[in-house]
Amino acid sequence: MNLPSDFATRINLFKGLTPAEISWVCQRLHERQFPPAVDLVTEGEPSDLVYFILDGTVKVYLPQLDGGQVILNIQGPGDVVGELGAIDQAGHSASVITLETTFTLWMTRTHFLEMLRTIPRANENLLCSLVGRVRRVTRLIRTFAALDVPGRIAHQLLLLAEEYGQNTPHGVLIRLRLPQSEIAELVGASRRRANQVMVAFKRQGVLSADPEGHITLHCPDALRALVD
Image (cartoon, rainbow, N blue to C red):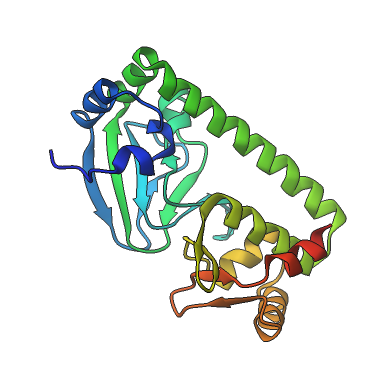
């Protein structure tokens, strides 16, 4: 099928693969576009497909009995979704929902596992991704214990900019849709308090956000000063 010509450089798991390996992967990938508010995977359900995000934003969360949710992560371009459930067959450990129109590539679980067995670089890339995720969680736990809400929001934005940032003439654009309600839940703050902090950051010229919730950092050093 006609995949984007640069898909192998846009998906972290496929970076560094040889032309022959990319050809093998290409023959087993399919494209799919999802509108906002669609569940890609559901906690506890079996994992038959693995998704690779080309563009868009998804939220990883745990549904709660009272109808609420605990946000574990926000993911975007380059990331893989559903890989853990595909590997251990224990069902998805969390639910994942789109926050905006999201363009994906997908592969069956069978082909995904075959890829990991036959393409060492893909296996290494996955391991690096998982290690990075553990390190990120460790940093976030330390942040929660040591920083106030402005510091936690600053730290979260810097982490997302590090992973999804794109340099523009106006600053670092975080290529994710980040509604303030999601930011609040990510840092364990009330929506009102998170909104107060974000409004202050905007007034100070530290950042700006477009109507869709895409944030540009104009002065990352000001955020770092709240974290260091």
